[in-house]
Length: 268
Image 1 (cartoon, rainbow, N blue to C red):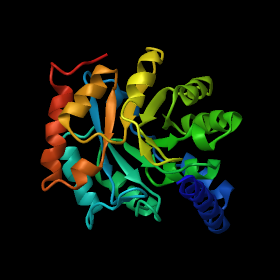
Image 2: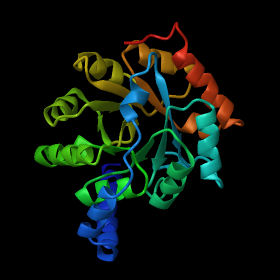
Image 3: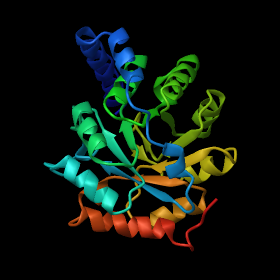
Image 4: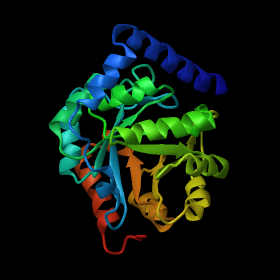
């Protein structure tokens, strides 16, 4: 499984190089700075209760194909209508079957912020994400040296975007804080082993400083799990599989959103 993780990173680096051969770094940088300002991610996260970040997800390296999403823009609009605070788009074409172009189309069609989920290893990808409509993006300490992580967070924020720094353990959480992360996500899925650890959030999140926004990722399938994460301090949860595989994704999203916004839902 570790080789799968390394292959994902290798593929990301090779894909970036190919795209940069077509559009230079200077060009993509200039384009990103000419874009309209990003939408307010922090406002979406600071609401009472536990918000839902609904994910457009066709496939994963672990489960393979999840859902044949033929109309991603329409699905995103349905999830927003169901109350999703943020829409997450996987842009990796190989293992998640997404694309930057799809994210751009979704971003143009909705008013809530858009999260770009990918394995970002190069500054080029940050400017690229902004050009394709991202307001927020993911960074993983597991694949970045400390100085590089800090530099990528700074670059993300220089464009007005928010960096969601995904960690798997307390050591990576400490690295995220040292690098200046303001939003930390605890991913229950360890991509180096592909194993799921649903206890990770409850171990890491309570020890984070009060001013850090906390997001739970992977394995969230039900109201019960959402409430459990909220009780441990989650400001939001990322939910993909259980929504996109539901008979009525909008209703599945609405039920989760209603639970997260209910007065009885734990709130920091």
